[in-house]
Image (cartoon, rainbow, N blue to C red):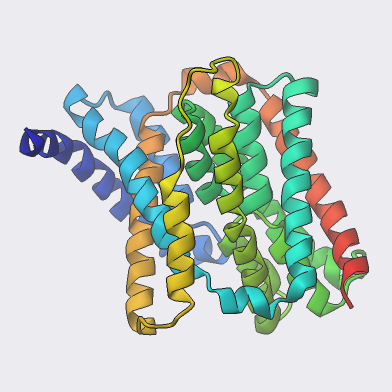
Length: 334
């Protein structure tokens, strides 16, 4: 029986694997790489285009759904090889507190404004807020798995990450060089890591000042990635879709626990760096496949119904991150 289930998934898995391969080819373009556009972003865009132009047979569905769920969870667990406890310790308690403050405040403000002022669906407001507050597309994917939202909502949230993360990469270095942020170069590295949406975007933003600043930005950014764990655990207790259903069982996100365990294991440095790089490359493949699968399940008709309010929320959170992170870093660090 289990063999039959796996064979049913093969067509869909081959489809998302092919999509991921094409995405990596595009991501290898020097111009896109310079902009910090990763294979994840390309995969969801290609997936949306293909899913809306080509009517895939129903036999592809099991494999596509498997990639969007099970492969995603495995990828989130392996994502822990990108973070170590030593790196977290190295940035200091101030940077850790800054990250925590920015993540929690952005989540709260984004959800409240999204649901109350802009009247967005709770899932959509939460996904956009998590994408901005924590770690971009990876956070959107992980949270989407917890709250069980529709694929098109995750696609919209990822779109906002792409747009405003790209704006950050160009705008922040200009503001820094003009002295408008009031930050030293060292502080700018912390600021970039604490406010830019994606890891690759944070690296590009910091590296535009210097390579060392870029490394600082990445480390601070990875601490924000670590904060994904308590957010996922919180959402397993408080789920917008289950707010009126008291009978719903608590679902512990074991992949979040696995993510934490991998971080701790990675901190022991038992695995050679060359193997860690290979694991990270495989992890990026799984994430790209999951992103492509979500794209294939996203329909333009549903996106159109949402309107411009998601963009307004993302813009407000972008402005909040820019102003609040700059002020916090300026007065909380030396």
